[in-house]
Length: 558
Image 1 (cartoon, helix red, strand yellow):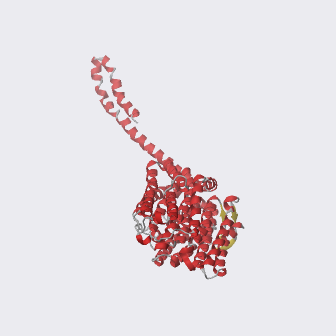
Image 2 (cartoon, helix red, strand yellow):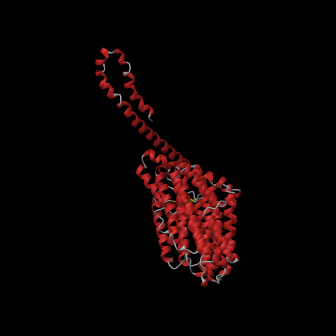
Image 3 (tube, one colour):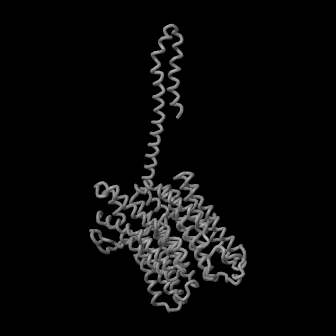
Protein backbone atom coordinates (compact mmCIF):
# COMPACT_ATOMS: atom_id res chain seq x y z
CA UNK A 1 0.00 0.00 0.00
CA UNK A 2 2.87 2.37 0.76
CA UNK A 3 4.11 2.14 -2.82
CA UNK A 4 0.73 3.05 -4.28
CA UNK A 5 0.46 5.98 -1.87
CA UNK A 6 3.98 7.12 -2.77
CA UNK A 7 3.12 6.91 -6.46
CA UNK A 8 -0.14 8.83 -6.11
CA UNK A 9 1.07 11.47 -3.64
CA UNK A 10 2.96 13.69 -6.15
CA UNK A 11 -0.01 13.59 -8.53
CA UNK A 12 -2.33 14.70 -5.75
CA UNK A 13 0.19 17.38 -4.79
CA UNK A 14 0.24 18.63 -8.39
CA UNK A 15 -3.56 18.88 -8.45
CA UNK A 16 -3.59 20.73 -5.16
CA UNK A 17 -0.95 23.12 -6.43
CA UNK A 18 -3.01 23.88 -9.52
CA UNK A 19 -6.41 24.28 -7.87
CA UNK A 20 -5.70 25.23 -4.26
CA UNK A 21 -3.01 27.85 -4.72
CA UNK A 22 -3.60 31.39 -5.80
CA UNK A 23 -2.55 32.87 -9.09
CA UNK A 24 0.34 34.68 -7.48
CA UNK A 25 3.66 32.90 -7.59
CA UNK A 26 4.38 33.17 -3.87
CA UNK A 27 1.42 31.08 -2.68
CA UNK A 28 2.07 28.46 -5.39
CA UNK A 29 5.70 28.35 -4.35
CA UNK A 30 4.91 27.80 -0.67
CA UNK A 31 2.29 25.13 -1.35
CA UNK A 32 4.41 23.29 -3.92
CA UNK A 33 7.45 23.30 -1.63
CA UNK A 34 5.52 22.03 1.41
CA UNK A 35 3.78 19.29 -0.56
CA UNK A 36 7.03 18.14 -2.18
CA UNK A 37 8.68 17.92 1.24
CA UNK A 38 5.77 15.82 2.48
CA UNK A 39 6.21 13.45 -0.45
CA UNK A 40 9.93 13.22 0.33
CA UNK A 41 9.21 12.31 3.94
CA UNK A 42 6.68 9.73 2.76
CA UNK A 43 9.35 8.00 0.67
CA UNK A 44 12.03 8.08 3.34
CA UNK A 45 10.99 4.72 4.92
CA UNK A 46 12.09 2.93 1.74
CA UNK A 47 15.71 3.26 2.87
CA UNK A 48 15.28 3.52 6.63
CA UNK A 49 13.05 0.62 7.64
CA UNK A 50 11.44 -0.97 4.57
CA UNK A 51 14.16 -2.06 2.11
CA UNK A 52 11.96 -4.53 0.18
CA UNK A 53 8.29 -3.85 -0.57
CA UNK A 54 6.06 -5.40 -3.23
CA UNK A 55 2.50 -4.68 -4.42
CA UNK A 56 0.50 -6.06 -7.34
CA UNK A 57 -2.87 -5.05 -8.77
CA UNK A 58 -4.50 -6.45 -11.92
CA UNK A 59 -5.03 -3.81 -14.60
CA UNK A 60 -5.98 -4.90 -18.16
CA UNK A 61 -5.29 -7.50 -20.86
CA UNK A 62 -2.78 -6.45 -23.48
CA UNK A 63 -4.25 -6.21 -26.96
CA UNK A 64 -3.46 -9.18 -29.22
CA UNK A 65 -2.06 -11.34 -26.42
CA UNK A 66 -3.22 -13.40 -23.46
CA UNK A 67 -1.03 -11.37 -21.11
CA UNK A 68 -2.65 -9.52 -18.25
CA UNK A 69 -0.95 -6.27 -17.32
CA UNK A 70 -0.61 -5.74 -13.58
CA UNK A 71 0.18 -2.52 -11.76
CA UNK A 72 3.09 -4.37 -10.21
CA UNK A 73 5.29 -2.24 -7.97
CA UNK A 74 8.32 -3.24 -5.92
CA UNK A 75 11.14 -1.50 -4.15
CA UNK A 76 14.60 -2.83 -3.37
CA UNK A 77 17.86 -1.14 -2.44
CA UNK A 78 18.61 0.13 -5.94
CA UNK A 79 15.13 1.49 -6.61
CA UNK A 80 14.89 2.97 -3.13
CA UNK A 81 18.07 5.04 -3.41
CA UNK A 82 17.26 6.35 -6.86
CA UNK A 83 13.79 7.26 -5.58
CA UNK A 84 15.48 9.16 -2.75
CA UNK A 85 17.38 11.08 -5.39
CA UNK A 86 14.12 11.94 -7.17
CA UNK A 87 12.01 12.88 -4.16
CA UNK A 88 14.67 15.10 -2.56
CA UNK A 89 15.74 16.81 -5.77
CA UNK A 90 12.10 17.81 -6.38
CA UNK A 91 11.81 20.27 -3.46
CA UNK A 92 15.35 21.46 -4.29
CA UNK A 93 14.19 22.23 -7.83
CA UNK A 94 11.16 24.16 -6.57
CA UNK A 95 13.11 26.02 -3.88
CA UNK A 96 15.90 26.93 -6.27
CA UNK A 97 13.54 28.21 -8.95
CA UNK A 98 11.61 30.75 -6.92
CA UNK A 99 13.37 33.76 -8.44
CA UNK A 100 14.00 32.08 -11.77
CA UNK A 101 10.36 31.32 -12.61
CA UNK A 102 8.58 34.32 -11.13
CA UNK A 103 4.80 34.46 -11.19
CA UNK A 104 4.40 31.25 -13.19
CA UNK A 105 5.45 29.12 -10.24
CA UNK A 106 2.12 27.29 -10.23
CA UNK A 107 2.73 25.83 -13.68
CA UNK A 108 6.33 25.04 -12.87
CA UNK A 109 5.57 23.31 -9.55
CA UNK A 110 2.75 21.26 -11.05
CA UNK A 111 4.94 20.04 -13.93
CA UNK A 112 7.78 19.17 -11.56
CA UNK A 113 5.48 17.20 -9.25
CA UNK A 114 3.93 15.26 -12.14
CA UNK A 115 7.38 14.39 -13.43
CA UNK A 116 8.36 13.25 -9.95
CA UNK A 117 5.40 10.85 -9.87
CA UNK A 118 6.22 9.42 -13.28
CA UNK A 119 9.89 8.86 -12.42
CA UNK A 120 8.88 7.15 -9.17
CA UNK A 121 6.54 4.94 -11.20
CA UNK A 122 9.33 3.97 -13.60
CA UNK A 123 11.64 3.06 -10.72
CA UNK A 124 8.98 1.00 -8.92
CA UNK A 125 7.45 -0.82 -11.91
CA UNK A 126 8.03 -4.55 -12.26
CA UNK A 127 5.69 -4.97 -15.22
CA UNK A 128 7.13 -4.26 -18.66
CA UNK A 129 4.07 -2.43 -19.98
CA UNK A 130 3.64 -0.33 -16.84
CA UNK A 131 7.32 0.55 -16.91
CA UNK A 132 7.08 1.61 -20.54
CA UNK A 133 4.10 3.86 -19.78
CA UNK A 134 5.94 5.68 -17.02
CA UNK A 135 9.22 5.68 -18.95
CA UNK A 136 7.67 7.52 -21.88
CA UNK A 137 5.14 9.63 -19.97
CA UNK A 138 7.82 11.37 -17.92
CA UNK A 139 8.96 13.08 -21.13
CA UNK A 140 5.73 15.12 -21.26
CA UNK A 141 6.20 17.28 -18.13
CA UNK A 142 9.84 17.83 -19.06
CA UNK A 143 8.68 18.94 -22.50
CA UNK A 144 6.34 21.43 -20.79
CA UNK A 145 9.12 22.75 -18.55
CA UNK A 146 11.46 23.33 -21.48
CA UNK A 147 8.81 24.83 -23.74
CA UNK A 148 7.45 27.24 -21.11
CA UNK A 149 10.52 28.18 -19.08
CA UNK A 150 13.49 27.42 -21.33
CA UNK A 151 15.88 29.66 -23.22
CA UNK A 152 15.64 31.38 -26.57
CA UNK A 153 15.64 28.12 -28.53
CA UNK A 154 13.39 26.30 -26.11
CA UNK A 155 10.77 25.21 -28.62
CA UNK A 156 13.14 23.50 -31.01
CA UNK A 157 15.09 22.00 -28.09
CA UNK A 158 11.95 20.57 -26.47
CA UNK A 159 10.71 19.13 -29.76
CA UNK A 160 14.09 17.58 -30.58
CA UNK A 161 14.34 16.10 -27.07
CA UNK A 162 10.84 14.61 -27.21
CA UNK A 163 11.07 13.15 -30.71
CA UNK A 164 14.58 11.73 -30.28
CA UNK A 165 13.91 9.99 -26.98
CA UNK A 166 10.44 8.84 -28.05
CA UNK A 167 11.75 7.34 -31.28
CA UNK A 168 14.46 5.48 -29.38
CA UNK A 169 11.82 3.74 -27.26
CA UNK A 170 9.38 2.67 -29.99
CA UNK A 171 11.38 -0.48 -30.71
CA UNK A 172 11.27 -1.42 -27.03
CA UNK A 173 7.47 -1.21 -27.16
CA UNK A 174 7.42 -3.67 -30.08
CA UNK A 175 9.79 -5.96 -28.19
CA UNK A 176 7.59 -5.85 -25.08
CA UNK A 177 4.50 -6.74 -27.11
CA UNK A 178 6.30 -9.70 -28.75
CA UNK A 179 7.47 -10.99 -25.37
CA UNK A 180 3.95 -10.69 -23.97
CA UNK A 181 2.58 -12.58 -26.98
CA UNK A 182 5.06 -15.44 -26.63
CA UNK A 183 5.24 -15.72 -22.84
CA UNK A 184 1.64 -14.81 -21.98
CA UNK A 185 2.85 -12.36 -19.33
CA UNK A 186 4.29 -8.88 -18.96
CA UNK A 187 5.65 -9.49 -15.47
CA UNK A 188 9.41 -8.92 -15.51
CA UNK A 189 10.33 -11.93 -13.37
CA UNK A 190 8.06 -14.22 -15.42
CA UNK A 191 9.53 -13.03 -18.72
CA UNK A 192 13.10 -13.52 -17.46
CA UNK A 193 12.23 -17.08 -16.42
CA UNK A 194 10.44 -17.86 -19.71
CA UNK A 195 13.13 -16.59 -22.10
CA UNK A 196 15.43 -19.68 -21.85
CA UNK A 197 12.44 -21.92 -22.60
CA UNK A 198 11.58 -19.89 -25.68
CA UNK A 199 15.12 -20.34 -26.95
CA UNK A 200 15.15 -24.07 -26.27
CA UNK A 201 11.81 -24.61 -28.02
CA UNK A 202 12.95 -22.65 -31.07
CA UNK A 203 10.33 -19.92 -30.71
CA UNK A 204 13.10 -17.40 -30.12
CA UNK A 205 16.01 -17.67 -32.54
CA UNK A 206 19.46 -16.25 -31.95
CA UNK A 207 18.73 -13.45 -34.42
CA UNK A 208 15.42 -12.67 -32.75
CA UNK A 209 17.08 -12.47 -29.36
CA UNK A 210 19.62 -10.02 -30.77
CA UNK A 211 16.81 -7.81 -32.04
CA UNK A 212 15.10 -7.86 -28.65
CA UNK A 213 18.38 -7.05 -26.94
CA UNK A 214 19.03 -4.18 -29.34
CA UNK A 215 15.53 -2.75 -28.82
CA UNK A 216 15.89 -2.54 -25.04
CA UNK A 217 19.52 -1.38 -25.16
CA UNK A 218 18.72 1.40 -27.65
CA UNK A 219 15.91 2.82 -25.52
CA UNK A 220 18.13 3.08 -22.45
CA UNK A 221 21.25 4.20 -24.35
CA UNK A 222 19.33 7.22 -25.66
CA UNK A 223 18.15 8.11 -22.17
CA UNK A 224 21.60 7.94 -20.49
CA UNK A 225 22.77 9.10 -23.13
CA UNK A 226 25.48 6.87 -24.55
CA UNK A 227 27.54 7.76 -27.60
CA UNK A 228 26.43 7.99 -30.44
CA UNK A 229 22.88 8.64 -29.19
CA UNK A 230 23.74 11.86 -27.37
CA UNK A 231 23.04 14.53 -29.98
CA UNK A 232 19.89 15.71 -28.17
CA UNK A 233 21.63 16.29 -24.84
CA UNK A 234 23.69 19.46 -25.17
CA UNK A 235 20.99 21.63 -26.70
CA UNK A 236 18.31 20.29 -24.37
CA UNK A 237 20.40 20.85 -21.24
CA UNK A 238 21.40 24.35 -22.32
CA UNK A 239 17.81 25.43 -23.00
CA UNK A 240 16.24 23.78 -19.94
CA UNK A 241 15.58 26.05 -16.93
CA UNK A 242 17.84 25.42 -13.97
CA UNK A 243 15.10 23.77 -11.88
CA UNK A 244 14.15 21.45 -14.75
CA UNK A 245 17.80 20.59 -15.40
CA UNK A 246 18.10 19.52 -11.75
CA UNK A 247 15.64 16.70 -12.44
CA UNK A 248 16.66 16.05 -16.05
CA UNK A 249 20.39 15.61 -15.42
CA UNK A 250 20.21 14.73 -11.74
CA UNK A 251 17.51 12.05 -11.86
CA UNK A 252 16.02 11.26 -15.28
CA UNK A 253 19.34 10.35 -16.91
CA UNK A 254 19.94 7.80 -14.14
CA UNK A 255 16.80 5.92 -15.19
CA UNK A 256 18.61 5.05 -18.43
CA UNK A 257 21.43 3.44 -16.43
CA UNK A 258 18.82 1.82 -14.19
CA UNK A 259 17.18 0.29 -17.28
CA UNK A 260 20.39 -1.52 -18.20
CA UNK A 261 20.69 -2.92 -14.68
CA UNK A 262 17.04 -3.84 -14.16
CA UNK A 263 16.08 -5.08 -17.63
CA UNK A 264 18.92 -5.59 -20.09
CA UNK A 265 21.38 -7.57 -17.95
CA UNK A 266 18.84 -9.97 -16.34
CA UNK A 267 16.84 -10.55 -19.54
CA UNK A 268 19.78 -10.95 -21.94
CA UNK A 269 22.80 -12.03 -19.86
CA UNK A 270 24.56 -13.95 -22.63
CA UNK A 271 24.26 -11.13 -25.17
CA UNK A 272 25.21 -8.55 -22.55
CA UNK A 273 28.42 -10.47 -21.95
CA UNK A 274 29.05 -11.12 -25.65
CA UNK A 275 28.67 -7.46 -26.66
CA UNK A 276 30.09 -5.97 -23.48
CA UNK A 277 33.21 -4.81 -25.33
CA UNK A 278 31.05 -2.61 -27.58
CA UNK A 279 29.49 -0.85 -24.59
CA UNK A 280 32.90 -0.50 -22.96
CA UNK A 281 34.41 1.19 -26.01
CA UNK A 282 31.37 3.39 -26.54
CA UNK A 283 31.65 4.32 -22.88
CA UNK A 284 35.33 5.17 -23.26
CA UNK A 285 34.56 7.34 -26.26
CA UNK A 286 31.96 9.13 -24.17
CA UNK A 287 34.32 9.46 -21.19
CA UNK A 288 37.19 11.02 -23.13
CA UNK A 289 35.25 12.66 -25.94
CA UNK A 290 32.69 14.20 -23.61
CA UNK A 291 35.42 15.67 -21.42
CA UNK A 292 37.38 17.03 -24.38
CA UNK A 293 34.29 18.62 -25.93
CA UNK A 294 33.38 20.07 -22.52
CA UNK A 295 36.80 21.77 -22.43
CA UNK A 296 36.05 23.47 -25.75
CA UNK A 297 32.70 24.96 -24.67
CA UNK A 298 32.11 28.63 -23.99
CA UNK A 299 28.51 28.04 -22.87
CA UNK A 300 28.75 26.67 -19.33
CA UNK A 301 25.45 24.82 -19.54
CA UNK A 302 26.69 22.97 -22.61
CA UNK A 303 29.91 22.27 -20.74
CA UNK A 304 27.94 20.68 -17.89
CA UNK A 305 25.96 18.66 -20.44
CA UNK A 306 29.10 17.12 -21.94
CA UNK A 307 30.52 16.67 -18.45
CA UNK A 308 27.44 14.66 -17.57
CA UNK A 309 27.95 12.58 -20.71
CA UNK A 310 31.51 11.84 -19.62
CA UNK A 311 30.61 10.83 -16.05
CA UNK A 312 27.67 8.61 -16.96
CA UNK A 313 29.75 6.96 -19.69
CA UNK A 314 32.20 6.02 -16.95
CA UNK A 315 29.32 4.36 -15.11
CA UNK A 316 28.52 2.35 -18.24
CA UNK A 317 32.14 1.21 -18.50
CA UNK A 318 31.97 0.05 -14.90
CA UNK A 319 28.75 -1.90 -15.47
CA UNK A 320 30.07 -3.78 -18.49
CA UNK A 321 33.39 -4.56 -16.82
CA UNK A 322 31.29 -7.00 -14.74
CA UNK A 323 33.71 -6.75 -11.85
CA UNK A 324 32.14 -6.62 -8.42
CA UNK A 325 34.20 -3.62 -7.30
CA UNK A 326 33.06 -1.57 -10.30
CA UNK A 327 29.45 -2.68 -9.85
CA UNK A 328 29.68 -1.53 -6.23
CA UNK A 329 30.60 1.94 -7.44
CA UNK A 330 27.64 2.26 -9.82
CA UNK A 331 24.88 3.23 -7.34
CA UNK A 332 27.23 5.47 -5.35
CA UNK A 333 28.29 7.33 -8.48
CA UNK A 334 24.71 7.72 -9.71
CA UNK A 335 23.68 9.36 -6.43
CA UNK A 336 26.88 11.42 -6.27
CA UNK A 337 26.55 12.71 -9.81
CA UNK A 338 22.90 13.57 -9.24
CA UNK A 339 23.85 15.76 -6.29
CA UNK A 340 26.80 17.56 -7.89
CA UNK A 341 25.26 18.18 -11.31
CA UNK A 342 22.10 19.56 -9.69
CA UNK A 343 24.16 22.04 -7.67
CA UNK A 344 26.10 23.10 -10.78
CA UNK A 345 22.95 23.77 -12.80
CA UNK A 346 21.39 25.77 -9.97
CA UNK A 347 24.44 27.99 -9.51
CA UNK A 348 24.82 28.64 -13.23
CA UNK A 349 21.09 29.33 -13.41
CA UNK A 350 21.35 31.91 -10.64
CA UNK A 351 24.10 33.73 -12.47
CA UNK A 352 22.24 33.57 -15.77
CA UNK A 353 19.09 35.01 -14.18
CA UNK A 354 21.05 38.00 -12.88
CA UNK A 355 22.95 38.83 -16.06
CA UNK A 356 21.19 37.00 -18.93
CA UNK A 357 24.51 35.38 -19.75
CA UNK A 358 26.38 32.18 -18.99
CA UNK A 359 29.47 32.42 -21.21
CA UNK A 360 32.95 31.55 -20.04
CA UNK A 361 34.28 35.06 -20.74
CA UNK A 362 31.19 36.94 -19.60
CA UNK A 363 32.24 37.13 -15.95
CA UNK A 364 35.34 37.88 -13.94
CA UNK A 365 36.36 38.81 -10.43
CA UNK A 366 33.16 37.39 -8.90
CA UNK A 367 35.05 36.27 -5.80
CA UNK A 368 35.13 39.90 -4.61
CA UNK A 369 31.57 40.86 -5.52
CA UNK A 370 29.71 37.63 -4.75
CA UNK A 371 31.72 35.75 -2.11
CA UNK A 372 28.92 33.35 -1.15
CA UNK A 373 28.43 32.33 -4.77
CA UNK A 374 32.20 31.90 -5.10
CA UNK A 375 32.47 29.58 -2.10
CA UNK A 376 29.56 27.43 -3.20
CA UNK A 377 30.72 27.27 -6.82
CA UNK A 378 34.27 26.26 -5.91
CA UNK A 379 32.97 23.59 -3.53
CA UNK A 380 30.59 22.25 -6.17
CA UNK A 381 33.29 22.23 -8.84
CA UNK A 382 35.64 20.29 -6.56
CA UNK A 383 32.90 17.80 -5.71
CA UNK A 384 32.23 17.27 -9.43
CA UNK A 385 35.95 16.76 -9.97
CA UNK A 386 35.89 13.93 -7.39
CA UNK A 387 37.62 15.70 -4.51
CA UNK A 388 38.54 13.14 -1.80
CA UNK A 389 35.89 13.29 0.88
CA UNK A 390 33.01 13.66 -1.57
CA UNK A 391 30.67 10.98 -2.84
CA UNK A 392 31.99 11.48 -6.38
CA UNK A 393 35.44 10.39 -5.22
CA UNK A 394 34.08 7.20 -3.68
CA UNK A 395 32.03 6.32 -6.73
CA UNK A 396 34.72 7.06 -9.31
CA UNK A 397 37.45 5.33 -7.31
CA UNK A 398 35.39 2.14 -7.07
CA UNK A 399 34.49 2.31 -10.76
CA UNK A 400 38.10 2.79 -11.86
CA UNK A 401 39.47 0.19 -9.46
CA UNK A 402 36.92 -2.38 -10.61
CA UNK A 403 37.57 -1.49 -14.24
CA UNK A 404 41.29 -2.07 -13.68
CA UNK A 405 40.66 -5.46 -12.09
CA UNK A 406 38.12 -6.51 -14.69
CA UNK A 407 39.42 -5.02 -17.94
CA UNK A 408 43.06 -4.24 -17.31
CA UNK A 409 45.31 -1.22 -17.00
CA UNK A 410 44.77 0.27 -20.47
CA UNK A 411 40.98 0.58 -20.17
CA UNK A 412 41.24 1.85 -16.59
CA UNK A 413 43.84 4.43 -17.66
CA UNK A 414 41.65 5.72 -20.49
CA UNK A 415 38.62 5.86 -18.20
CA UNK A 416 40.66 7.61 -15.53
CA UNK A 417 41.45 10.48 -17.89
CA UNK A 418 37.96 11.77 -17.12
CA UNK A 419 39.07 12.68 -13.59
CA UNK A 420 41.97 14.79 -14.88
CA UNK A 421 40.01 16.43 -17.68
CA UNK A 422 37.08 17.23 -15.37
CA UNK A 423 39.41 19.09 -13.04
CA UNK A 424 40.89 20.98 -16.01
CA UNK A 425 37.66 22.41 -17.43
CA UNK A 426 35.96 23.07 -14.09
CA UNK A 427 38.97 24.81 -12.56
CA UNK A 428 39.29 26.87 -15.72
CA UNK A 429 35.74 28.15 -15.13
CA UNK A 430 36.65 28.89 -11.50
CA UNK A 431 39.71 30.84 -12.59
CA UNK A 432 37.86 32.86 -15.27
CA UNK A 433 34.65 33.59 -13.37
CA UNK A 434 35.96 34.13 -9.88
CA UNK A 435 39.48 35.46 -10.35
CA UNK A 436 39.60 36.67 -13.94
CA UNK A 437 39.43 40.19 -15.33
CA UNK A 438 36.65 42.21 -13.72
CA UNK A 439 33.71 43.40 -15.79
CA UNK A 440 32.66 46.92 -14.69
CA UNK A 441 29.12 46.32 -15.95
CA UNK A 442 28.70 43.58 -13.34
CA UNK A 443 29.89 45.57 -10.32
CA UNK A 444 26.39 45.66 -8.87
CA UNK A 445 25.71 41.96 -9.37
CA UNK A 446 23.90 40.79 -6.19
CA UNK A 447 25.07 37.79 -4.21
CA UNK A 448 22.93 34.73 -3.55
CA UNK A 449 19.85 35.07 -1.38
CA UNK A 450 18.81 32.86 1.52
CA UNK A 451 16.52 30.64 -0.55
CA UNK A 452 19.15 30.11 -3.22
CA UNK A 453 21.75 29.20 -0.63
CA UNK A 454 19.32 26.84 1.07
CA UNK A 455 18.76 25.01 -2.22
CA UNK A 456 22.46 24.36 -2.89
CA UNK A 457 23.90 23.71 0.57
CA UNK A 458 21.95 20.47 1.28
CA UNK A 459 23.26 18.99 -1.99
CA UNK A 460 26.85 19.70 -0.97
CA UNK A 461 26.31 18.44 2.58
CA UNK A 462 24.84 15.19 1.23
CA UNK A 463 27.82 14.80 -1.11
CA UNK A 464 30.29 15.15 1.75
CA UNK A 465 28.21 12.88 4.00
CA UNK A 466 28.21 10.00 1.49
CA UNK A 467 31.83 10.73 0.71
CA UNK A 468 32.80 9.90 4.28
CA UNK A 469 30.03 7.39 4.95
CA UNK A 470 28.75 5.59 1.80
CA UNK A 471 27.73 2.55 3.88
CA UNK A 472 23.93 3.09 3.58
CA UNK A 473 24.12 2.97 -0.22
CA UNK A 474 26.63 0.12 -0.20
CA UNK A 475 24.58 -2.01 2.17
CA UNK A 476 21.27 -1.63 0.34
CA UNK A 477 21.90 -0.85 -3.33
CA UNK A 478 25.14 -2.67 -4.10
CA UNK A 479 23.84 -6.22 -3.33
CA UNK A 480 20.93 -5.60 -5.71
CA UNK A 481 23.24 -4.43 -8.50
CA UNK A 482 25.48 -7.47 -8.01
CA UNK A 483 22.48 -9.81 -8.04
CA UNK A 484 20.95 -8.27 -11.17
CA UNK A 485 24.24 -8.63 -13.04
CA UNK A 486 25.20 -12.05 -11.62
CA UNK A 487 24.14 -14.16 -14.61
CA UNK A 488 25.69 -11.75 -17.12
CA UNK A 489 28.86 -11.74 -15.06
CA UNK A 490 28.98 -15.54 -15.11
CA UNK A 491 28.52 -15.49 -18.87
CA UNK A 492 31.35 -12.96 -19.20
CA UNK A 493 33.66 -15.16 -17.10
CA UNK A 494 32.79 -18.16 -19.27
CA UNK A 495 33.60 -16.20 -22.41
CA UNK A 496 36.93 -15.08 -20.93
CA UNK A 497 37.74 -18.65 -19.93
CA UNK A 498 36.86 -19.97 -23.39
CA UNK A 499 38.96 -17.25 -25.02
CA UNK A 500 41.90 -18.07 -22.74
CA UNK A 501 41.63 -21.78 -23.55
CA UNK A 502 41.46 -21.05 -27.27
CA UNK A 503 44.53 -18.85 -27.00
CA UNK A 504 46.39 -21.53 -25.05
CA UNK A 505 45.46 -24.08 -27.71
CA UNK A 506 46.87 -21.87 -30.45
CA UNK A 507 50.10 -21.43 -28.48
CA UNK A 508 50.42 -25.19 -28.00
CA UNK A 509 49.79 -25.78 -31.69
CA UNK A 510 52.39 -23.17 -32.62
CA UNK A 511 55.02 -24.73 -30.32
CA UNK A 512 54.18 -28.31 -31.34
CA UNK A 513 54.84 -27.60 -35.04
CA UNK A 514 58.61 -26.95 -34.74
CA UNK A 515 58.96 -29.81 -32.25
CA UNK A 516 57.89 -32.34 -34.89
CA UNK A 517 59.58 -30.59 -37.81
CA UNK A 518 63.11 -30.45 -36.39
CA UNK A 519 63.64 -34.24 -35.92
CA UNK A 520 62.57 -34.80 -39.54
CA UNK A 521 65.91 -33.44 -40.81
CA UNK A 522 68.17 -35.89 -38.98
CA UNK A 523 65.75 -38.72 -39.77
CA UNK A 524 66.50 -38.33 -43.51
CA UNK A 525 70.24 -38.05 -42.82
CA UNK A 526 70.30 -41.22 -40.69
CA UNK A 527 71.22 -43.62 -43.56
CA UNK A 528 74.40 -41.63 -44.22
CA UNK A 529 75.75 -42.19 -40.70
CA UNK A 530 76.55 -45.95 -40.92
CA UNK A 531 79.24 -45.43 -43.61
CA UNK A 532 81.85 -43.88 -41.30
CA UNK A 533 80.53 -45.90 -38.36
CA UNK A 534 81.82 -49.10 -39.93
CA UNK A 535 85.46 -47.97 -39.89
CA UNK A 536 85.29 -46.03 -36.65
CA UNK A 537 82.67 -47.43 -34.20
CA UNK A 538 83.79 -45.16 -31.42
CA UNK A 539 82.72 -42.06 -33.33
CA UNK A 540 79.08 -43.19 -33.39
CA UNK A 541 78.56 -42.29 -29.75
CA UNK A 542 78.35 -38.52 -30.24
CA UNK A 543 75.81 -38.88 -33.05
CA UNK A 544 72.83 -39.53 -30.75
CA UNK A 545 73.18 -36.32 -28.71
CA UNK A 546 73.68 -34.28 -31.87
CA UNK A 547 70.36 -35.51 -33.26
CA UNK A 548 68.32 -35.31 -30.08
CA UNK A 549 69.51 -31.85 -29.02
CA UNK A 550 67.43 -29.89 -31.54
CA UNK A 551 64.32 -31.84 -30.57
CA UNK A 552 64.67 -30.79 -26.94
CA UNK A 553 65.05 -27.09 -27.73
CA UNK A 554 61.40 -26.38 -28.61
CA UNK A 555 60.15 -27.84 -25.34
CA UNK A 556 62.36 -25.44 -23.38
CA UNK A 557 61.59 -22.38 -25.51
CA UNK A 558 57.96 -21.84 -24.41
